[in-house]
Length: 237
Image (cartoon, rainbow, N blue to C red; front, side):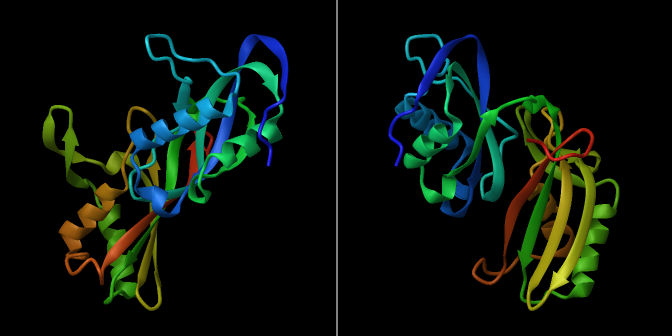
């Protein structure tokens, strides 16, 4: 296992190093704040030549892509850090993974050529596990989410209020998978001005169709964020 990172010459201008990682299994339940703390500690222990924050308690300056909702899994999450020297990318990946669990492992390390502000949308796969699921219910879920407006109670800084979330819902499809699954594939806004948590869609279906009202041991759902998209519809990287 690689324990040290080979350092090249100092850079005249810091370069943005992008780390792509997955967040799956039990780690889907940690908050974005806990993820930030975890990655900050791992970066500090790796001895990467990164830019640190100013102040009394300096830390590695990390920037994350669109936050992943608690309870959602994803194979493609990103964090950026500025490095002050040239580094061996394979060594960086190995050293970071030596301090991370399997469900939060690094997939790729490379120098970034895009900014997170380029992210405009995200594709989620929401799987509903329902004992009475069938094709008709799948069609009903799709039809409910295709209606306009879609008004939900949304928590804001100024308190709870009713909000029409339909402008942030770009596309939706639903299919039934025997014996008890309804799989929703939705594309939602993910830019800084109109980010939409997929849980709001599930809550809307719960209220309008009466699903997920029984025991959580018999009825539940999972959320998987499969893609982040740029404005032109291409996969963000």
